[in-house]
Length: 405
Ligand code: PMT
View 1 (spheres, rainbow, N blue to C red):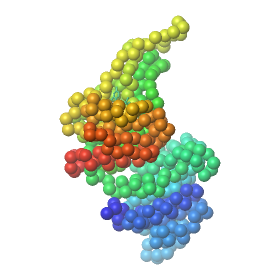
View 2: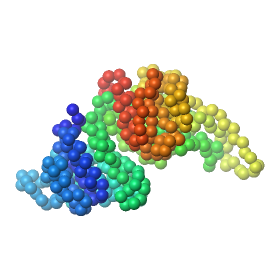
View 3: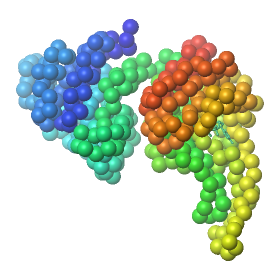
View 4: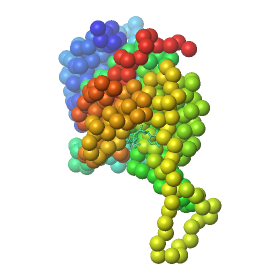
């Protein structure tokens, strides 16, 4: 039975071309057994007729705050109270700003202010609007209040630009909503440690060696594990990403820092995801002062860094260990070799030479191995979806029942 069966979802639809996708979302949620009440803004009505949502949800669609159909209740309070979950999809920059500021000037914004239900927002807008510091600040404000966001996708936008801003696909939004309601069974209370980002190995005070890891893969795992009820610690090398809500964030720089942060938490960890791109070598000496330009050539001596994953593999007792492998050739062979040498329970291999896979992208293409060989080969999908699939695979392999501690 779907985790949506019998749940009441209030769906806010705001004015963007992606409003048409909200019709599909309404249909999918209703088919999964949810009771969907749609609130549209005046602008949304310019894109899709309320009748579309009424037909798909089989419920009246609210647009006007003062259209009180039932004299025994106040509509926006009644709707706000009825929600098990409040979803806004698509969410414009305007509704995000209103919610961040606490404005209530239409049916949707007043209902949002009145609800005590968890809120999930799926933004959709032009790439520059999405990147605008004011919009990003509003998103941060809402995140810090515990509101969850489903990241927009990257690609061709209706406005003609290519970039980030496309509404997440309805299936992805449904999966996120299902995850919300399924919250907790295998993951509740599990202590999860995730590493992310590319370590920074200093040459001198202004120069360093690093790699292209953005941290997106590891942050996605941390966020999804948290959403499923795990107690998550995220140990991250420098990235541009904000700390996910409700996750213990430990920021480190070098491989040595990461090793110490990981090992000091190993005993209190149930599951480890080692998505960080750790530098294999570091400069033998870190100059205290900026190195001055002099000779025509400069030789930098590098020494081997500790292999954190291997160290975990050696010390692990009951911990379930998921390693990663970034390869450019012989993916299966090298991945299986790493899995065995580093004593991992699962290994996620990405061919980072493939477009849409590996470093920096919002998507990845991975093959997941255990000691017997290939477990699953996942086509290109968002890192968030990969994180979800991975957590599901791991959950199937964990000792029964989540821990309550
Ligand atoms: O951060 P993104 O931009 O989203 O990109 C995601 C990613 C490509 C970084 C991620 O999917 C990934 O592949 N992470 C592992 C990158 C890596 O370092 O691969 P590797 O094959 O060199 O190392 C194998 C494993 O050993 C990894 O789990 C790594 O964390 C670990 N390792 C490696 C070297 C070392 N000194 N210590 C380690 O723990």
